[in-house]
Length: 62
Image (tube, rainbow, N blue to C red; front, side, top):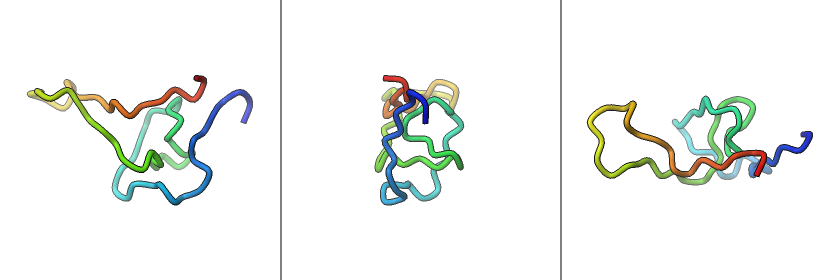
């Protein structure tokens, strides 16, 4: 895995129905499944999907 850190050791925390396209997120498995266990999306006020973001994101390199 080079220097990348992947927080997903098994499929136990995979969130059904959630996919992730962010390849450098530590919670993104190779198949695009999110294994964060839970996600938080913000900010509190948004008017369009482009104004939202996943605040659970964790960089693999950190």
